[in-house]
Image (cartoon, rainbow over all chains, first blue to last red):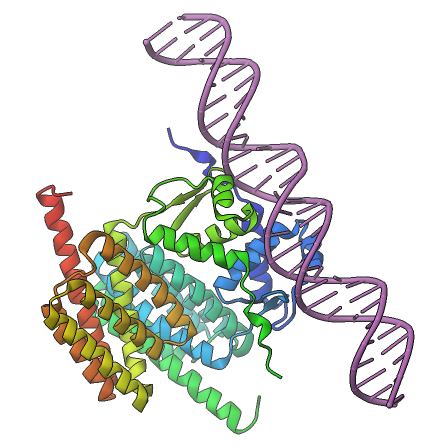
Length: 226
Length: 226
DNA sequence: ATATTGTATTTTGTATGCAAAATATTATGA
DNA sequence: TCATAATATTTTGCATACAAAATACAATAT
């Protein structure tokens, strides 16, 4: 008989989920210190599961721990953000390659639906809607191409990326008009079950975004618009 | 003034280190359950830091946690091992690319020394020595090309790979005679500061090992030599 | 003997207690 | 007034206590 009882959600997990959204939504400000006792009371739990969640988030780099001093909300520097894009570049390249090798009929349909979503929101002119469609597409892609390990790594850093983009750039690095053809290229290559082209298309997409990001950062620091 | 006092090593860390070596050295057998109270006593600590270490190892996939049941030493399946090789393939490709772009004179010297190490141990005919030189080379490569994030991910899965190879294959996937030219190619490309070629060489190296691994697994399951 | 129910034991998840370290506050002297 | 020392408060790191869940064991019925 199947064991349905394995979905026990413990306080660690709840604390982790809450903290993570608080951080990504900026309800906990970057750089600020965590006062364990207070936060634990606020969350209605004890320090034990709170600290467990903090340690987990530390491993994801959303939090810094300084021994004997405490936990601090971390903020990603521009360099780190660029590095995360570089990481996603090769990993989503791999995911796209793998996706092209194992995609099924119903998944092709889903992929086409996602493409339609991107196209209509681009045509509709809503950056926010496009950003969401973008997110759904990448999420599906990594689900499609990733084993557990690859998916988890990519999901962690995708979420961080999206949160960062929403915070500082209205959700996107580049305008839909520019990225839509790239998304189309990735999807077409995967549907055609062409691994080389799928990987290359995904990498190109990220590479262009990364280069735009670097360019913008350089301009920012030049005209001091920081 | 610089704060030198931040090197406080807490029990979490010590427990983590000990457990990790115990797992990788098979002192804790795959599949076996962790009896927290007993293990804590054995390590001379309480359950609190032990559980912290276990949770950290769970995030690295060396341990499985089943809610309300406990922690179990995990073992990597063949498929997972192949997936890890695939991950390292793209990530060390990236590390090699990055290394080629930022390598300095003294690092070139060190890289040449590592190559000499590989050559002499290949000539000497000791697989074990070659495996160690191989390990040192890859470690230096990811140190060279990785930012903190990339380094950490690669280091985690490199260590797992090496432990697996030592356990099941005497330390290597393929004989030194076969891999030495590949190592040489990677090093030469990096020294020549050629990013494309560096990445490609590193990827080829891993791809060949991965394919050998798959082939061996298939043969194993065919003639039942498992 | 085998299955089923009930009882005892172990183990986990979480809160709490407490010493040591870090931080804030006050007092003292230049 | 400002720096330094002394003291009080807060916070961390870790151990421990304890209820609830899981497991092992025993008793009873089939």
